[in-house]
Image (cartoon, rainbow, N blue to C red; front, side, top):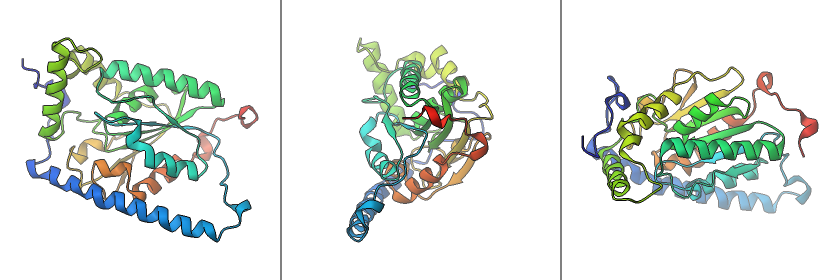
Length: 276
């Protein structure tokens, strides 16, 4: 077995890797980031004509934890975090500097972070996870419905984690080689072809409690993962038009995320009297 070999169960029948040239479509992220910048300028103009007393939005009851994708850190979701905060959402970073570690360890770190945020805010937490971050978040949400009230995934191939572009295969292989060379804190061969991979995959397919609402965003323009693998049968699937990377910065996608994060009245189990 070579470091580049993924376990067969990570790429089930019916799914496939995006074509070689598909990754070129990720260049749309430049336009998507530009769209965000334009929106920011427009909002600033509007704020000049808005009375100061009406500028501050009402605070949301439930906090939101944002989890970055593969090889990314919290900074990759900074623009989304900024927009959510402007809407009155209390957002929290995952404290992941670069999502390149053992998936089980990262999930455990996320779970501890959720416990900390839930204790601090006195309520359950909603999670937004991009790509790999969404897959790991789904597993944690399934195990800990006492901590999680809602989940939004962005381009997360939960049904087939191995259905990704060959460029990612090369990145995974590099991490495995570095791990075998003695560099700690990185994905090992076990994380892509052994018991660790199996546990992470199985965790990501566990049934969610009825109290956890779940929205999965996918894009047919995704040049990194097979968009079909992002449509979890237990989620409300929503199609967006964005590149894989651009899902984190396109204001149109962020607007969909914001709407998906709004609590479903029948599922809210928050004691408002405990919220500071």
